[in-house]
Every structure is written in C-alpha cells, then in structure tokens.
Image 1 (cartoon, rainbow over the protein chains, first blue to last red):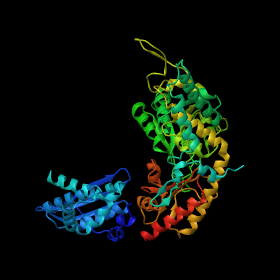
Image 2: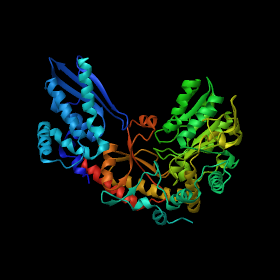
Image 3: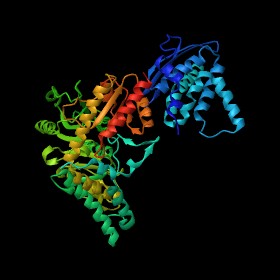
Image 4: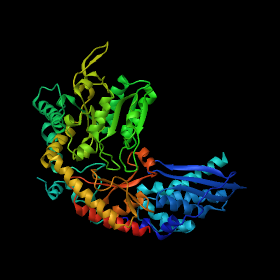
Length: 154
Length: 410
C-alpha cells in the first residue's frame, strides 16, 4: 500500500510552503508556459541562458503541492548548470518518474541508488511514482523546462 | 415516511469496500451515484434470461427485451410526470448527449444569426460547449446570466438580457455550488418572452422530486448513473410537439420508417432519435433504479440529503476556524447536497489525496464548470456530495480527514 508519507516528504512540503526561485525574469530571458489541462495547474518558466549555461531560472504559477514543490526543487537543482548537465538532470528525473513499481535486483538497486544520489534533494519526489495520477503534477515543470531549452536551441 | 438510510446502505455492495484500511466513505454521488443491488440484479436478469435485440423481433425473448426497454421509457415518463407520457422520452448515452441532441437537432433547425441562447455562468460544460459549437455553425449568440456573490443566479437584469432570446438553457441544481435555481420562474420568464426553456437536470432529477407539469419547461436532460442507475444511459425529454418538429440527430437503423436507394423517411416518436441498438440492459437497470427511488420517495431523498447538508455545513463552519471555505450558498437557504470546499493553503488535489488515505472519496477539479471557477477566482475545488445512502458518520470521517489535511499543510 502506498503511504501518504511517501508522497508528502518534509522537503516537498518545505518547497511548497517556501518555493525557491519564485518570480519573473525580464528579456532576454526566455519565457515558456506549462499547462496541465486535467487539473488546471499552470506554470510560467523564465530561463536565462548564456554561453551554454542556465544562468538563472524563475517560475510563477499555481498548482498542487507536488507540481509547485517539483518546480522549486527543479529550479534549485538546475540553476547555474551547463545545458548538458541540465538535460541530463531532466532525463534522470523523468526516468525516476517512469520507473515501474517493483522489487529491483541488486544491480538495479545500485544503479537506482546512484541515480538517487545524483538527484540529491530531488529524490524526495521518488515516492510520487506510487501515486500514478500525480506523476503529471511532478513532471509539469520538467517538461516545461525541456520545452524551453528546445525553443532556445531552435 | 422517511426511509432508513442504513437499509439503503445495506443494498449497495460497493459500500462494503475497504480503502487504505478504512471502510469506504463515498462522497462523490454528484459525479456518479453507487448502484443498489436491485439495479444490478435487473441488468443481470436481462442478460441471463431476456437478452435479445429490441423491436421487430418475433420470437419470445425479443418481445421480452422490447417490453423491458419500452417499459423503462414508460417508467421514466411516470417518474417525471411527463405531460405527453412515454412518447416524449428519448434514451441517449448521457445528459451531455442529450444537450448535443438539443443543439444539433432543434438548435440547428430553429436558430440562426441574431438568435440568442441564454445560459448561466454556473452551467456544466455540457450546457455551454454545444451552444458555442452552434455559434460557429449557425451564428447564434450565447449569453450568460451572471452568478452573484451569494452563489445564486443574479436575475436583477434578466429582463433586459431577454432581447433576442429563443432558448433559456439553465441547470436546475449546480453541480459545483449546490445552488437550486428557480426553474418555474425562469420558465415563466422564457415563455413570457416567446422563448423556450431547457433544463439541465443531471443533479436535480437525482436529488429532488421532478414534476414536468408543475415545472412547465420544454426540454430536460439528465443521466441515469447519477440517480442509482447504470452508466451509458441518458434521458432527453421534450414536449411531444417539439420532438415531432425536430429532425433526427444520428442516422442509422432503428430511426427510420423507410429507406430506399433514393433516401429515407425518419421514424415517428422517440425512436427517431435512437439510431442503432439502444442501451437495453441499462434501461432495465434504470427502470429498477426508478422503482427503488419511488420506494424511497423523492421528497424523502431530498429531505434526507438536506439534513445531511445542513449538518455538514454547520460543522464545517465551526471546526476549521475559517480555514475551510464552502463555495456555495449558506445554510438556511434551499440548496442541494453538493459541498465544494476551498481549503486555505491546500490545493484541492492534495486535499483529495489526503482524504483518499482515510478512504474518503471526494472530487477535486473544476467539475466541468470552468466559467464558474473563473467567476470565483478559483482553479479548482474539492467537492463532497451526498446520496440517499449517505450518513452523518460519512461527515464525521470527512471532518477527521480534512483536519489531518489542514494540519499537514499548516
């Protein structure tokens, strides 16, 4: 049985109550909107990229604790990183959100532990996969960031 | 005489479920009601003993299936006190399809540029989108009756708003607010201006007595699954003379009088709108649901749910020190058993998630009423709603779980 504490870790509640990197950035920062039509969650993401580095990121919007804390945790994790690192973090996080629920073997466990370590505080969101309808909440900000990077590249 | 809701509860197998280690507390009847055993058994009986396609059959079970299906039509007419009886009852897929039938058949035939359909800000999308679609294809105007800060229709300027109106189409009971609208007064208003009136009865028919002669409306749409019946069956009722003037909506078998290589002649009566094999098993179940509700008495159902609502609103107002706000009319006015909650600092999806841990089923979201949500500056609410099988002990668990949610996010 999925436990509520798996979903609402203290770190998540903390980021929900006091979101990091909240606000807007003026141009030339890139602005991208993300939308979850199912539950009405909305985020607006501002990304300032220079010389292949995500110099600054800010977010506004509204939504549930999972979508808002995921935005906040993401912003703290990717700010100041190279775009290659940012893309890798996005891929690692999205893999975390698609891991089917099963008992992993020893090798798999080692890999997933390494991944979780790399994710740092983001690993607090790992419990979301046990609540499949909430995965969309957790990935909203990440999909929006991926879209923003694609638009900046284009 | 009032029924014993504990006996109703005993008739609903799903209420034996245990969710997350707790007995289920089902507070989502506004979305779909639970099914009592006699309804399940009626559908079971049809499949085990009478299953055949309806109409035109000569063999015995085909005749039985036809009798079951047409019997459900008669039972529906009686339940609603339809002035023209069963020829006015059209079976559809759900209330949404009934509204689409109204817009595509009656609307597309009788409305054009300059004609106005007057809906309200508290409508379900089912009573908004088909009219916007008709605006695109036929140039009609869609106008909205505003909703006041008291969560009721603001009818102060409705006389001016009637210019050009050919159809008033409003809900009898809001699926978000619980507000009960003055249907008879709106019918009189529409008729005084030479307009017709359609009613969304998805909530009201399930929870209040409906008498079409008293209400004096022209069209009514509702769904079986919100009134103890099965999914997959809706009702469209219209006055017989209106039905006669309306062209068919969907084409195919069952809706024709004649077909040749030159063309077709539509059937007369409700069959004209029932192309293809209809939901026969569902009709059998629906007739059983109507019998069940008749046994309880719709006035008793309404009174029972009213008591539950008054109790829940009173306790919600005193338990949370203002942190839980009800988006809907206050206690003391006539309203239905739909309670939309806005919990300070807690998103409705988180509210519903925490409640689920206690086995409590409530619905988070915009409830297919986005214009209404926008009117009150909300993205979503968490909605609890009662049925005939609900008890005050359901409210006890709701309050216990809500207390947990409030503390968790404090």
